[in-house]
Image (cartoon, rainbow, N blue to C red; front, side, top):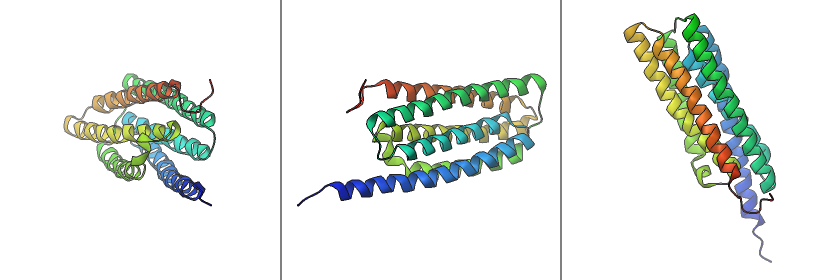
Length: 202
């Protein structure tokens, strides 16, 4: 008697393993970047840490969704997108606050932590590369990580500009830009969940 359940179980277990690794890496980098952003007075690094936190949340939600119904997966993706939207707005407000009240970004610390975050996200992106064509809850995690790579590079660029110019403006601008990009990605995820999914019940 033939059965397709074994390959399906292997695929499901692989998804869980990859999501656990991604969750652990992003949760760790969230703490490292947040502490570094506060100590280094960096709006960009704080925004990047919030992006890492949103990723960790997305992986946790996706992990819970593995093997569940299509409806549950769509709801999980919507929750991820909503959380990302809130964090993006928070990052923009934090950047504006630092722009108004001043800050002294530590460029070397920012550059080092952003480079570490880029390395972590590159590893995670490679791990979840197959997810970009997957179900909605998995596609959301790929979108999150793709956004992170762009954010990491932007923060590194801002750190270099801060070092060269001695001005906090590049850090503030990048922090706000990352926040806006996070909001854009959130909207993309929410739009994806509104598309009719196979087997979904309206």
